Amino acid sequence: MRNRLFRLALYASLIQQILFWTMKEEIPKLCFFYGVPLTRQVTYHTMMFGYWFLPIFFVVYYFSGYFSYVDGYEMAILIRYRKRSTFFWNRLCSLIRELTILVGMQLLIGIGADFASLRLLGARGGFLYDWKLDEMIVCLMNYFVVMLIIILLQNLLDMYLESTYCCNAMVNVFIIISVFVYNFHSSLRSGIFRLVNIAMHARMDVQGMEMYFCMVLIICGMIGGMRFRWKKMSLLGGKNRD
Amino acid sequence: MIKLEHVVKKIKNKMILDDINFVFHEGRIYGLYGINGSGKTMILRAISGLLLPDGGEIWVDGKMLGKDIDFPESIGLIIENMEMLGQYDAKTNLEIIGKIKKVATVEDIAYILERVGLQQFDGLKVKKYSLGMKQRLNIAQAMFENPDCILLDEPFNALDDEGRRMLADLLLEEKGKGKTIIIAHHYREELEKICDEVLEVNAGAIVCGEGNF
Image (cartoon, rainbow over all chains, first blue to last red; front, side, top):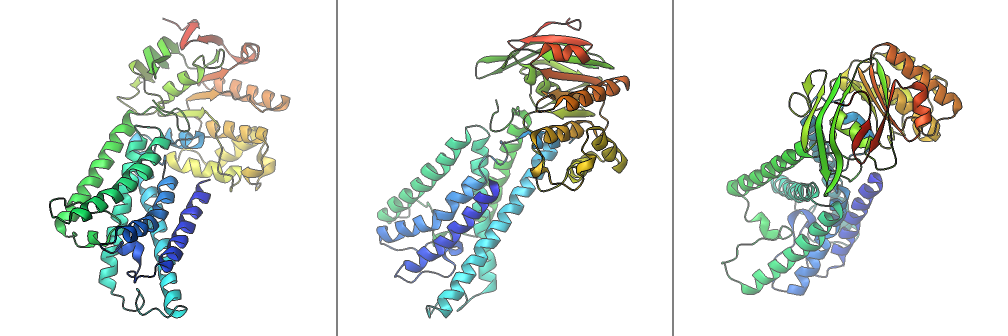
């Protein structure tokens, strides 16, 4: 089941690249890393947001119940650890490892698509046309951290609510509202609301030590919350818990 | 020795464990029987540290669960549908699990696989096992590390007559080594054949048993 979901997330990344190709306007290189460009056309960037978020839906489903779903085999593993927290940290490490693989595969798909557009479509731009390694590493880190925050937030909710509600909360509420918030913000064109949608290219402009410090704080806070809940959670098999 | 003192657990306003007071002694086999949803499995979960009670204390070999230890230090458990890793054979599965505690030797694994009758299927992937063979592997998983306390939830499920006899012999042998064994099962008659004491569980409480206090 999990393998199938993993493959689905990769197919979604592939479809995302194809959808980016269909855009007539110039799109930035490795759009899913760099984010959706800022425009004044609401329809254009809403559509771009939709494309950008497409693999995220599947990634969110893939990591759904990562901590709260414990089957019989995992119970047999769990009781052999001296402490509950050992199992938690092991799970966290494997979550980060799997996310790294997913992002790596997305990167390969992106570079492959870029190569194809350069060779097959004769594009005059794109990552392979004028790539900068330092810029790419920053983008990659940024993207990875943003993904990690989304997944940790979902799993934190997952430990308190039903998995289905959490996926819905992440996909239908968080993602869709964030697009509307951005549209609302851009329509105001004022600096009062400094809300930056995670999908848009502008997140690259707000990076800096403060931004990373803030992100690290958020991640630590969420991991702390999850660990606290894990220590107090009864594991009743499957998705069931108290 | 396992001691449950005023153990209470409520989930979604339903009383799952209702003031359980009981002592399980070493060298004895205890059977828990009762209707579906009576709380047999929940008692096993509470003893294994998977279920955290709202009130009361659980002591295993003088250590309090949730305070001194998170899980009993020496425990074997069958609970839920324990699907092992299908891409490996039985021996590899036990070796993988054994790497956590590092107490079982290669000889221990070979011995238990022989006892449960899986030695002849060496090399066969678990995904090709029948239900009965999977259950035998679960039994092996619970016992290969030679734990002091063995908790088995419906261990007779999917076993043929020969398998049931094998399990009964194995449990009696483990009892002889001074282990505490608790079995949850639907049928009292089957439990009475091997258990020193059969306890009736009803609505989250042990309603009869010598160990009640």
